[in-house]
Length: 356
Image (cartoon, rainbow, N blue to C red; front, side, top):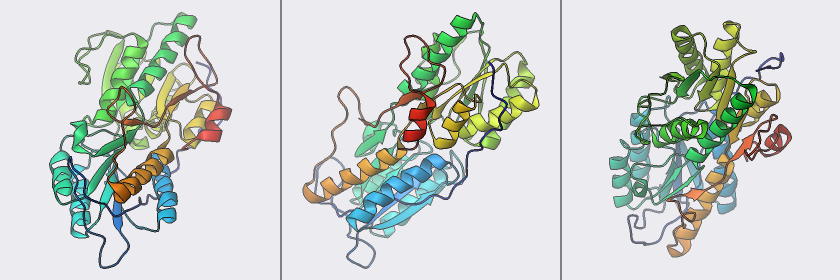
């Protein structure tokens, strides 16, 4: 791959904030009406994200904040110390229950381990909405607003397959995943990419059980730049002939690129990713990332607040997208090297819509 020589735009670490709250009325199927808020008439609801260092979650907060300002509600925000930090999310939920919150949104760090705490919250009358990452099982939340993460992985896999076939290249693939907890988002993107590339997977609910010799290995990144750099260094040591890198998100991709550049391989290793944030799209434009699947976190959070509002008014719960068990907020492949048969948009579109 002929990567541009321009300097990589680092993913900006930003502070993360909160989501809106709305008073809930009685409704069957899990959540009953909760308290109105902590000592006043303004309802409280929380936003609990995986970390406060990924700009993806900053846009999630912004979408929630805009909707919250319109609704006139109190916001409380919480974040894990790193991807996979389930305990901090448990503590945040317990804090919201004690505060008399009426509901919250959460991007689960451990989509299975968090379920007992979600159950306690729903039994206490809080409405639970998962964002971006489904719980295990999905009905542990009242609703989920998310990217189709399998489709996000599938698109970058199909793009890479088409490009490598056109160039007559045999792939040697590094898989930079999220965390040892293997939340649903991690599995879905990983398996989507592999299937998009035409690699036969074993159990589609598991990571790393494929036997294809093109896979050099899997490593975890915590969805962070430092983790991406370390994971890439590890896999390059294992096999210096790697020429294709799947990354769980764009901060991990940024770290992977640092390791690749340090090894003098920036011109012949292809990176694909998921997020479609503004820094990531700039990296696509610069030739650092070949293609990325763009998500819309602001939309996720805004629609989540709208769902809370509707539930508060008349007990209405959002309906899942037809054929899915979640509300699909959309995904678009962004690349300046379009491939036949793979629908995509260019970086001009990506920059107009990044984090939307």
